[in-house]
Every structure is written in C-alpha cells, then in structure tokens.
Length: 164
Length: 81
Image (tube, rainbow over all chains, first blue to last red; front, side, top):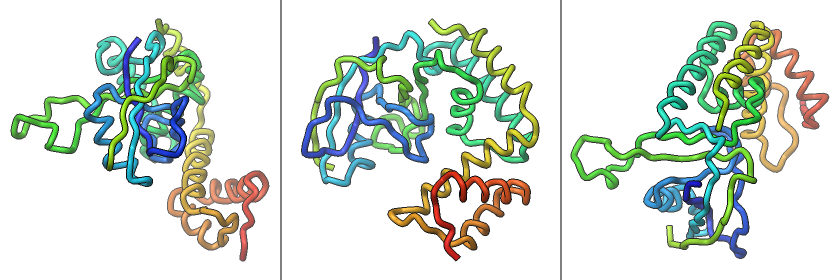
C-alpha cells in the first residue's frame, strides 16, 4: 500500500471519493490521479485548482500490487519503456503521425487489453525552481500515480485545505 | 503482481493485427473526439466548414469522409451550414 495525495478545488461538500480526471490533457489517460509528494500536491492546488480560490488535499492509500511502477521498479520501467517505444514506432510507421503519451497509454488499455493493470506510477521533472535547492540540478522526481480502478483506492480522507 | 510476459503477449497480438488503415482510423477517432470535445461548449452545433478545415489538417481524405459520417450518425452533433 502506498500513501498518496489527491488535489481538488474546494467545493461546498467535502469529497468522499476522488474525482476521475477526464481532461484531454490527462497525460496518463483517464483515471484518478495522485501525488506521491505532498509538496507537489500543494503546487497543483495553487496552480491548477484555482476556480473557487481554495483547494483541498485528500490523502489515501493505494494498493499498488498491480500498478505498473515505472519509478522504483527497474523491471517495470524497462518493460514499460520497451512497450512505449514499440507502440510509438508502429504508430509512426503505419500512420505517419507521432502519438502522445496519453494515446500510447490508451492504446495499452483499449487495444492491448491490459485489463490487469490497475494503474501506472510515473515521474516527470518539476518546472518550478522553488523545489530545487541545488542550482541547475533537477534532483527531485515529481511522481504521480494514475489509478484506473477505484477499488485500489482505500481510506480516502480529507487532509488539508489552503488558499490558491 | 503483474504478469509482464502476458501483457507483452497481448500487446504484440494487438499490434500484429493492426493495418495502416486500422491504426489511422483509431488514432483519427481519438483526435477527432478530442478536438470536438474542445471546441464544443454548451452548443451542440458546429459549422461543417470549421470541422472540415480542422480535420483536414490531420487526416487524409478517406478518414475525413469516414469520420464525418461517424460524427453525423453517432455523436448527435448537428452540422449546421
């Protein structure tokens, strides 16, 4: 189980479950998104959950038994990398178009029939220098998990609210 | 625990079956859906001209004609003149 954080705008009612992201720019596909690091959960609230002027962070535990962990599991990372490049190359070859990471992930789930995969944990690099204490060295991973199945999300509860 | 070997086998089987047309159609449908979701707000109408223009920047003529049929028949959007 992994403790993670979910950020949303503050609404009238507190959430009792996470909200599924169906945005077109949901980079790992449709699913429930969580942050590994509370600092990034706050940053997301300040920068992207501003509609009501306040954001809330919820904490939860995620059952990661069937999550593809491309961050800390070397076997999973190498496997995922191989499949991403395989699909990406074939899409370019057969369509002349370069797929986005969202389209690649959707291919895995929809065409590749990866029903066993409960989610994917992935990292990128923070763009905000405020998180970095060493000049010019992006040493901190910005880790997210997208859960495709709600049943792996347990003990979802309110953690903190803040102004944007 | 995930069975990575099984996942790879399933993916390889899916890729084996793909043709240029099937993959282009799949990708095209995804992008058309994304585009329409973006441009349509509360209104359920959009000009044919705007749709054609935008689609033609991504897809070849075959896909444009096929997706127009899909849009008209399945997605409930009125293609206003």
